[in-house]
Length: 120
Image 1 (cartoon, one colour):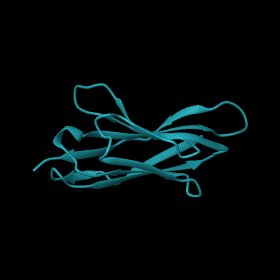
Image 2 (cartoon, rainbow, N blue to C red; image 1 turned 180 degrees about the horizontal axis):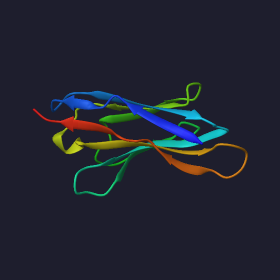
Image 3 (cartoon, rainbow, N blue to C red; image 1 turned 90 degrees about the vertical axis):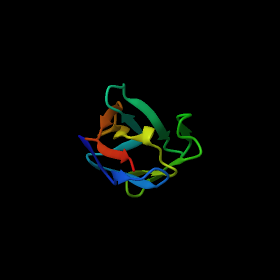
């Protein structure tokens, strides 16, 4: 099995910055796409950004130019640098990874979530 552990959430004022980290551990044969999703109260979970194994990236329109996703393949870790945060960025942020624990099919894995609150 693959476990994902997020860290770095918290309370920040509008205009501030936070950096989220997500480390994958356990039985990892191959780690493919890694990404971040978020879910605000009363809303559906939405994609924030993802990064492929070759480091190609994709962002939701709402975060383009403010958030940057990156990964350290040696550490099986993905990061989300969030700048110019807005109150509407407040949500639980979930790490996601498409990985295979052994040679064979890939599966979708989720972290437990980390709260990000943007408020003055």
